[in-house]
Image (cartoon, rainbow, N blue to C red; front, side, top):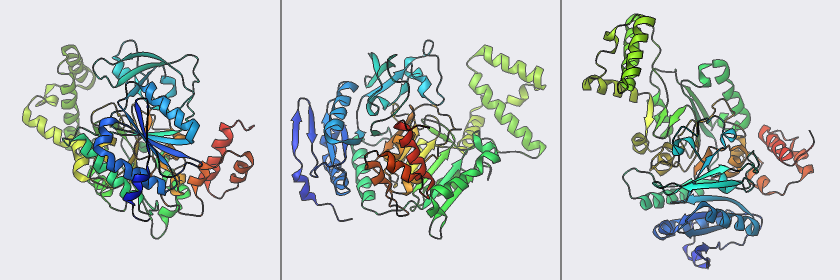
Length: 498
């Protein structure tokens, strides 16, 4: 791809409309467009990088608006999005910096797994942060309140009269700085520099990595094994002489963490997927290793009960119930929790625990290079937090520019790999995510990332085509499974009989 022509940035016209400022694309809008929605401070600090991103997308045939403001509430942001959608055929947006976060209540039936009593739990914990507020125009909400402490949170009930299913009109993503000790705007500037660099490379999706952690479907070999066969169908390029697909399971070694990190450090890695458990601050890769000797069994049990004792030590009733269970159910005395409150033992146990997962600071240290990472995990994409795993991945100095993760917990038995083949055939990440998202699933990073197609199909062009029933029926004869799947999705969305 030719180098960016800095001078062409001067062609961008700037139009102020009320409080929002629009930086219009130099490329004329024809069949689609994209928008960067950001706050005024971020635009002023990162103007050069955001305009470079705008220009590179224009070269790819995706005219891009930049809209900045000091946003007061989500409704203000949504008005701008809907206007661009109606007037300029908007296909997607990325929220950069400090953009209001909608917090959903009475919408748990639209999540895959999140179920929490909203009456007896804190509003922050029992609500779902979700940008479906912005990207599904049919959903309706009743405003409840703005958070008095974290004033970027806005709480809504899903309205009774609202549709009760998600059908996104556009795709959306977030890019926000994380609490890693670096100035926020410096993080965002560096991030968009590496995004622009990535867009200048014609890169095929032919290097793939999948990791399956303890306590998910991987505990059944019958459930785990088919992933290799589905990936072979979806992305045949990763199994040819140049391509490479690697699958690691939690029990391939006692502590597979180092193997996982070494995979993520590969400079040629295109796509990685983690089937695992997670929290905003951690990826849970593995559990306690299997033991096969009596002394190893004993050490593992003591390690488990020391951890259990620490979790219950501040609640005397709960602690006493634990001791009673140990004694009367399992015949264990207090020697099995000896040292649970000893600082030296605590430190040793902590280091052992660290070998089973990846924490925030480690992501910054090993600099993941996988261009895109999918976290089929709970909370790794919780963008209401100041720091979270998905954010750390894209804000690292590695080549990772896009992740797909969940803001709350998620049902891991769902088909997380659905239609991945479209990514290998040139679909933008946002186009793919628009077909697969649920209330809690979000892109963190660049939603416009696309790989060079591994075959003659241009999935990006397919997404731009206006719906045609005859065209979709024709695509059902495609030799590629995910093109057939794409056609079935479109026929279903447009009420095709049967």
